[in-house]
Length: 244
Image (cartoon, rainbow, N blue to C red; front, top):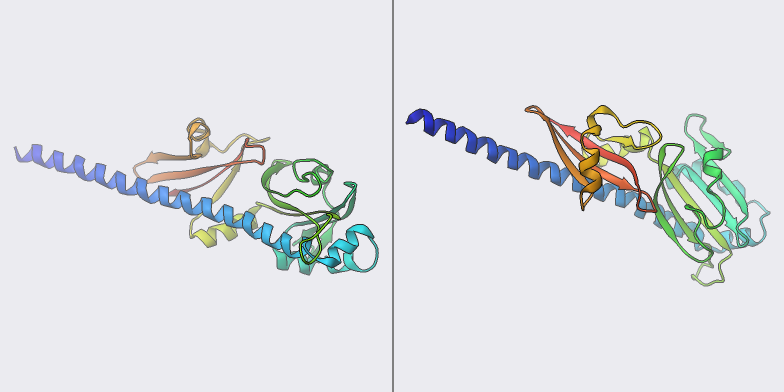
């Protein structure tokens, strides 16, 4: 009788512990979601600071003067962006620069990214419209915010479009890890095969209504994952954490 009671108690305890762990990992996933959303909101706010500005408006109409000299490595670092690009009313790219932390300077925009800096692309909405979200560029996840260029008072007509963007590279994921106090890992879904630890969760997470999945690896490890969809609502990457 005592043995039976003991085993019942063990089962109840294990189920209760599993429930607590599940709730804990769900909370961690929501922290990850909020952190990603905050990154997009931050890009949008930074974009607004420069797109609703007479200096940018004048440059978009008449791309000369010293405006481009202001958009240097220090400016991009302060904005915490990798890309700063301006297209005029005709959709022509008149300014584009990328921050290279390794060089401590700005460099030319990589061709894989430049290909999207054209009118009515995933990065650039129709003139006068805004767009923000995530896309995959050359197998890397890229957060961006695009907004119309307006006068200081928000009036138009739009002089063009400003695009700011940030790659979710190792440094960005490390910053998100610090923000969430989680050891995050980002797994791109293309063009490279997913890491072994996330292969098991891909079918589940793609079908999940909220884009989340929990996977128990063994008695010592449980993983929580969030599916990141691109601006066209297609699966782009999985970000998650494995906890003891």
